[in-house]
Length: 134
Image (cartoon, rainbow, N blue to C red; front, top):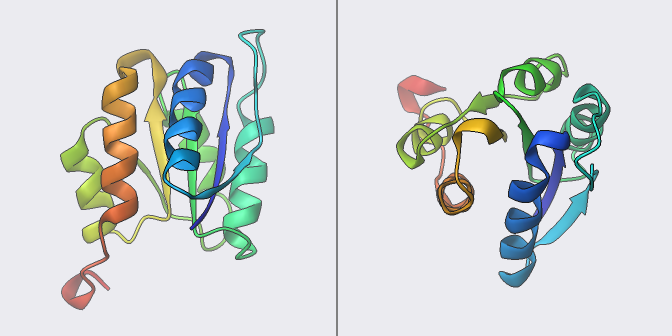
């Protein structure tokens, strides 16, 4: 699976852990940064992820910022991008099952590394149900 990921300075630790997990599972990861805790603007890292999803270069996207809201709003401006702000595995599962989300947005300030990795695993392995949700 091809996956694009981007985070602002608040999500660097989560991003590194998620990338390691994904690569360890054999996924191809396009990491758009950032890679330091120096203050940056989240749209600079969200737009490249959304561009890859929008253009079909990647199967899914992962974006991370402090609250998860700003970067989700940024990527949702792109045609064909459906980002869901997730804070539990159950929300991640529903974002895929019912909303056919193709980008998961994670709030770094409120999510532990194990929790974020578990949400991503759930997000990537859950299918869209279709039917009345289509």
